[in-house]
Length: 500
Image 1 (tube, helix red, strand yellow):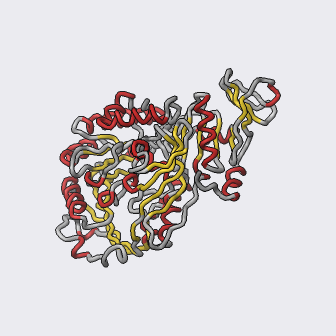
Image 2: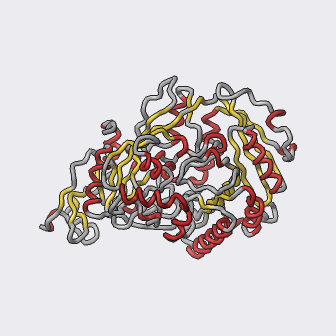
Image 3: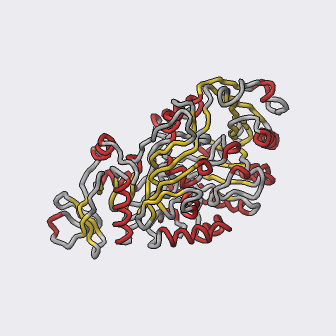
């Protein structure tokens, strides 16, 4: 059994508790708490006199107070709201094992929740148990000459980065926003500007520590329970709860040269991006498209970064920018410490929070397009996009290399250079008519992409049926379905995805 968090970690979770759950009534399908007269569903407190099934002993806490349940029924999307019956704040992995076994026995749905950054209720569960993994955030020792680190599923990538950088090392791939949990991104994929060099975050995992839907703790890897390993990575939580991961590390640079290169032509912009990832000229390549003064999305910015020593040579502007067709008069170039580059979104995030915009609805669209059709599809979708449809969000477009993407359940178009196209929308959460319209637009955009061999990157908000999921996973569907039957035979895990 893995390391138990420190007493400080356990107490940090315990200070947030409200009414503690003490039992479950199988007949009424309801929970009972220690608070007199408190209830969940039709359940009541200890004075009810009913025949309760006791909760197993826990190192952490199991709660069902209104504040905890309300928080667990929300996510970053602020679109879907499913209220659980209870929330587990585990003090150890043993707690996850005990409560998943309990829920499996009583057919109660379970969903792990990291930082709650899902956009469409993916980590919510109606009437079941939400497992908050934030207390499982230990980061193992990083040896100066090592090439891996083992971390808890609740560790945030910002914490992992700082711990590794202290030893001159770094995970090779980051999402642009660092305050996401390791378990959360490994369940989805984890794409970023370094993906063209190193694959997705799921492609850089040496081992997983998981609790299956049957409540078994298992260590799995490419050679140890490989069927489970490959069903969990990018498997959207359908077979097991990630409780820890051993991540690959590479040498970290001390400084980064960061470029913003302006373009006024979409096709030229996309072609130059492709050139850069095929040549491997930069360590990081992304790009954004913004509206001009007339509200037309045609202002393109190629974002690229070159790592300095010891991870790479001293950046040479002439070599790095050779042959690119950007407007040289508008180039922005910044040298900055490596971690400052990784965490460059932090000031903007704080500004959004201070302005109250962080709690807006986020009906995001995330597509993966075949490179051969990227210009046509991106152009069509941008032509139909209005600034109000994006709000204070952004539009991302950048290429990947398919040969680097080796995780079977991360579904990528059959093209050597697929592109991520993402419209990270924001809109007031009370404007449900606009949200519904944008969700319908997301579905239409997905169908446009699917018609040319595109897929969705499943972190956004695209209305999907079970048949759509079977189509999405394609040739990998039988593998996922078999693993689901084997490791979650009662089908209790993560119903919010709507896959099974």
